[in-house]
Amino acid sequence: MIDTYNAFVQPELELPPTGEGALSGLTFAVKDVFAIKGYASGAGNPDWQRTHSPWEKTASSISKLLASGARLTGTTHTDELMYSINGQNEHYGTPVNPKAPDRIPGGSSSGSAVAVAAGAVDFALGTDTGGSVRVPAAYCGIYGFRPTHNFVSIDGVIPLAPSYDTVGWMARDISLLRQVGGVLLAETNDEEALRHDFRRLIFAEEAWEKAEPSCRKALESVCIQLVQTEGMTQEWRSVAPEGLEAWSHAFRTTQGREIWQTHGEWIVREKPVFGESIGARFASASTISDAEADRDGVLRRAVGERLRELLGADGLLVIPTIPGTAPSRTIHGPAVEERRFRTMQLSCIAGLSGLPQVTIPAGEVEGAPIALSVIAGAKQDLNLLRWAEQFEKGR
Image (cartoon, rainbow, N blue to C red; front, top):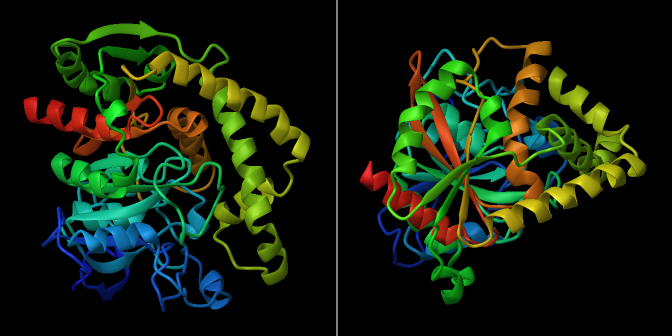
């Protein structure tokens, strides 16, 4: 395979299907953090790969896909230890966004999004802790899905912040996104849950205020189609009285504390070489105290309870996935953190609440993709994927 877009770490690594099923004849790639027996994941950092042995067992998410007829064809690039949403990597370079080559692809599941957008594979697995599937899917103009937390097994995946980590996936086709979900979520197929119909569209006022004017205007046509969906009511509503800045701060604090608890010992022992922004992020995480994390954990729990009650089994929260189009590939320094801060104010909504979110391509601004996101209630993952498929087919 010729890797024109620098999406792959190991394009020649292949695993054949172990059965036949809904995904027969399809190919997929996985972010270089998933366990593949006999293979040592790199997690975007040479020192990580140097200090870790090959996996002894393949991740169950991969095994399910193989058993359903799909073929694994390659591992893909990630930001260092998954701790970014840009897709830039100072060790291995930045994958090229096929839809906007002069802009970043988004991360940390950068290579997976690029491989899908470029047509190198039919679909790909990534991980999403703070937006690492949703953001690159939006920047690269493809569909992406983050499931309800703990709804898809995350065994055999290098952790970042376990209480936020999820296995997500991306595809160019909404029907395939749903089919992959049918495989990965098969054990959660609760017939009672699947009988629920979505009846309410809720547009989160604070989230739409974060969208750049050009992005918001471009998303209007999709929103009009949404509100014209038969049998759906719609309302604009404040969902974050504390402000999304406070929500994002609570996310960063609680996530950062977990990240240091997960990787701090290894960092202190091995002294890995990180890119400048990643190194600064880990250094900041090392200073977060238990008291700070506990304080912001109170808000985290309140947000989760509030959103789960608001959405129930029949509500959908509609937000922009990203504040605007992907930044330039040359973005660096303070501009990186400023964009990250604004983007996390949108992605933290599903993160704090642990709810499922689907990212839907919704046009372009100045030649670069933008996206709309829809968040459903807890464990409504399959319903959400089916709803998104029906909506997209009706557009």
